[in-house]
Image (cartoon, rainbow, N blue to C red):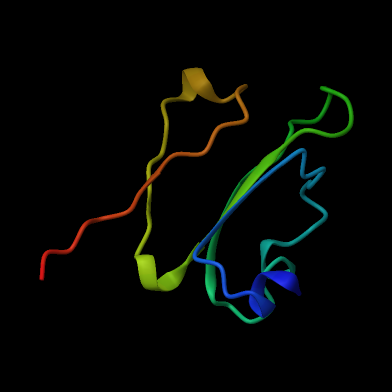
Length: 84
């Protein structure tokens, strides 16, 4: 997979066309990334969806949004800063 060949820290994808039939584990077979995704909900047509691949070394913290935002294809996460 290109993701592993170029050793990206972050990758954001729109129009993923992912759905519940595609397990998240299949998107990163080497388990180097925390994969966050928001698939287009059923009944809204094909296409859509967003996905973020964040390298595990960045220690991402997913932010769960309020239910009122459930119809929006949106991901939120924090990347904690570390001071040296």
